[in-house]
Amino acid sequence: MILAKSFLPTALLLVFALGCSPKPKTVQLSGKVIFKGQPVPAGYIIFMPDVGNGNRGSNKLVKIKDGVYDSSQEPPDQALTPGAYQLRIAGFDGQILPRFNQGKQIFNPVEETFVVPDNVSTKDFTIPDSAGQNVQISPTVDN
Image (cartoon, rainbow, N blue to C red):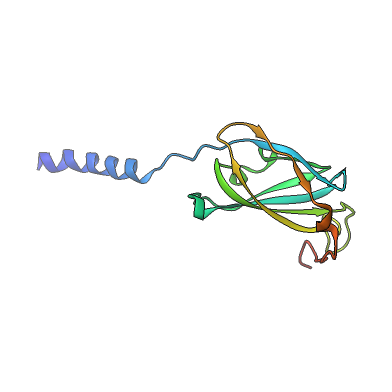
């Protein structure tokens, strides 16, 4: 009976210790987003984990304002972790209208890949002029 009483707390402690994984390391990534030589007024970058390259995290969204993005300014649940990502960059004119909370699109979303390093770093993005051709405008919020 004494052995069972001392075993139970130890077993519970072991279960809790194994069930609690440490939080993944987060990093700061910031930079500029330029389109046709000008800062992108508003937009976002979606970081989608590149599963094919071993990143099994979750999607993260980092906002662009006045041509600048900074992952450290986002809520904790949007913190970036190091690893390979597929990116989707969207840019808007920043002129708020009904159903367009960031304004109208100024270029079609651009997709590329990027490996987020495991330290504080900077990455600038220059959107190709061709992304501004035949822009497919869509609302940025539901009404």
